[in-house]
Length: 308
Ligand SMILES: [Zn+2]
Image (cartoon, rainbow, N blue to C red):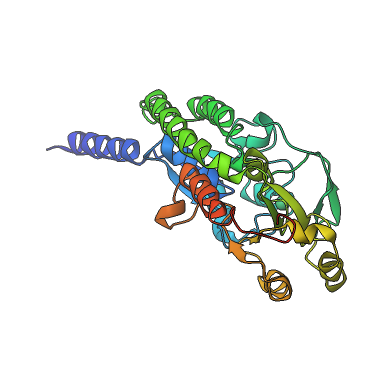
């Protein structure tokens, strides 16, 4: 082999290596979006910024996250100011040309969802109020299909033809799985409708509303503000307390306020993740929704003073 031939061979090897490495890198702000991307593009390399054990409103823009965003083709986030305390800094430090406001590489699910009650979603780190509405809409079974529709469209714009070869087929498969899951969820609804619960934050609002469950009290004095002693004492004297059947909290929250209330009232505390986890029972968004509804249904028959 002469010099020219070996140079050519090296070039060919490099190019084939490059095409094999031409990965579709995705940065997901929350695990639910990682799950959706993974079910649409099986080969996608996904970095998830938050987990079920973290409050997605407040994380640190760690160097590893900055590097992951720098190397990503697409970032999929909630939007509606959920990540207002950390995402702008991350985007700025990553300085990835395609992942920036109003660029195709930055997908905000909130753009494609109808948000409930544009209410005061207080953000501790900003000392600010978000007018867009409740950003925890990934637990709304009615909202997710149109988000996925838009996500499929966006992926087809930012990924190569090779990476999106099976996108349409995977989308069809996803829709079928979602439809089947919906049948399971609907079976829980008669049992859940009219149930009354106590929450800590508005993280479950959409799924509670879907199931016809009313959150009669919130351990947070205002959305995003941690429970205070005076607020908990006010709850203890609130007549709605008699109607509640269970207190729902999330794994990332301090369980003490709920436990305190439980000791005072005898109400059970149910810890439910608000997002997808590594555990099999909540490993995908449909499984998570099933898990939430089925867990709640085990408390739906509980007799309370208010119902007797
Ligand atoms: Zn929130």
